[in-house]
Image (tube, rainbow over all chains, first blue to last red; front, side, top):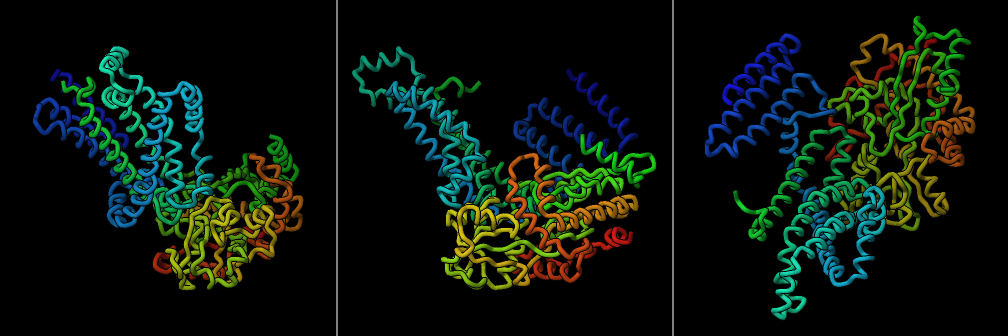
Length: 301
Length: 331
């Protein structure tokens, strides 16, 4: 095994040397990547306590370094792709604007729509669960709503609900409703017939059986839906702003800064979206861990 | 394909000035917007063979709501672009050195259209009003104008509540806004077509208030202008384009039909395009493609007066050249 790594490293060095003869810039980049890779291999083999955190960190930093190197070495125009350092500078210089955009788009638009959409979907799933009529009629309608393209719904909602966050929340509701509904309906079917019979023998009412058995068994499904919807909500709220907005918001900022060719600000805004998306998803994953500790998928090896 | 053979025939007939080996020089032109009479001069030059006569194979690339011509130019997707001067100068300041090589439009077609019943009779009345405007580089003239009037754009009773609207007039029709940005040759007529009478509207032409900025100039990358071959190609391109514009101004109805032929989306109507061509003719009439430095200076001054958030922070250096138009007009 050790020999294989040595062989790989040797081959890598050879490649770098050959490349150096052709294009020193490419050679430098491949060299950096190779060095970081070898470092990571060594780290993961050492079994050091911090390695679990260090290895992905080094990987991410390597990507950023390569990006920075590519932009600088090849003189890529900042209009096409700004360097990470320029993006970081733009981020630092515009924190107040980025925060205002975050509040407008994520907190007032995406989050409100997410809560309303997912909440409505769970209630609809309960209704569907109780009635065959709704099961046959409502699911196709939910599917139909999910199939509506955002470029069609967004301008219409802007006309209905105005330019503010309300129209963005409406777009998010339309986007998250169906994925959540499908997961919730499926989740409510997750308990075994045997378990439900057992509840029945305890003389449990519908609601008791729902709260004590069926909702807990549905939790993994519900969280699956909630996690999928986090990213959908973010995308929906940001893209909807392209079709009409006040002069604040992440989608608005991306749109006008592209027009101004301030790509560093655009990327700073993308960074905010990525951080918010990861944070939002992470929050849901954490909540799931706390609530579905009993589920086999949460078992520690 | 038919156009190509026509072009070849025209070349043979005129003896063409194409390169010695018989191939035409390629020019990719990025429009600022979708195919419409706003760009009639270029389509006429293509259709009537003026480009062919100059030994050029011109490829006209339509734009759209989310296409920033400077970015296409930077990415190498086009040799030359049409752009409003504010957005081009902002791009220049952002590190994309674009240079104006010709200016077919001598007047601005931008105006603000307001509901008469909103009580707005003069620009000063805009304080407290809601204005829907396009962004994506089209907002600069308005922001500069407001800052010159000392009206804020952060809403409130003495400021303008600004909305970022899509490229349609719905916000005005729906009365979500008191005023909306319109072009004399396009959106104003969309409002009229929606059943509104001109008496119900109040319009403010930027041109009338001394805050107009130059529109639809021809821009190329500075580095390319160091290449004599490119300069020669551009001179031929500008010469043929101006011939196209002249013909379009003299034959507006035919020019509109040519534009319709080239509209691959099928979204444009004859009535709208004919009307647009008539309005566009008013904007290009009297120009020969040469940039008027007075108008340039007025544009720069307007932009520099952008208040707290000026479009450009310093007067640009070398943002235009007469070299191309001088060469084009010399023959």
